[in-house]
Amino acid sequence: QVQLVESGGGVVQPGRSLRLSCAASGFTFSSYGMHWVRQAPGKGLEWVAVISYDGSNKYYADSVKGRFTISRDNSKNTLYLQMNSLRAEDTAVYYCAKDLVEMATIGMNYWGQGTLVTVSS
Amino acid sequence: DIQMTQSPSSLSASVGDRVTITCRASQSIASYLNWYQQTPGKAPKLLIYAASSLQSGVPSRFSGSGSGTDFTLTISSLQPEDFATYYCQQSYSTPFTFGPGTKVDIK
Image (cartoon, rainbow over all chains, first blue to last red):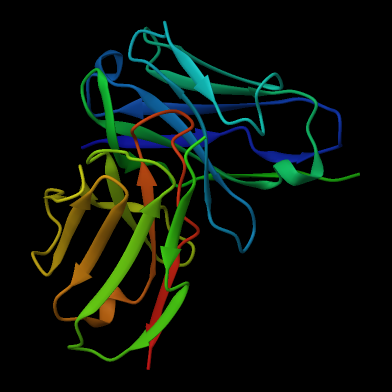
């Protein structure tokens, strides 16, 4: 069965960095685009970034562009989110999610359980 | 960027009610519209993709319609497990924006 397990969250001071990981299993990881979506406490969902199945294309929300970097290691079935220059408004639960179909973004049909990032001094 | 709006922002309904939630895009997104359900403390769940396609395993009481800028999610007969927050999301162009959500609670 498909499993996505995020890790790397925690408490970090403003301006510092953090790297999130998402370990994938149960499907051919190298065939699917992958996303990061976040949710601030008590708020709605915010799409953060997507990476194509082969890592050749990456797109970001305006709110994180230039500060966050999405990447993947298909040999390790792992997705990453490098978060630099963190701000209080980046505090959220971060979910990784898998595209529904191979090599295209239509919807996200599997999600991890989320990892909480708290940016606070 | 494409902006997504939803109405209503919340609604109260009873088990067995028919519920309709509307989503509007700020520009045409063809049929690149998805619906998700989220219950407290849980990850979102894909219900409908491509505006009207039912995701595998999702009960048939859920249906989606629309194209262009206006879309609808309908729950034909609300069940206790359907009390949740519903989000639309466009996958037409990046950034793949979500709507603000519609919370469905018990009347």
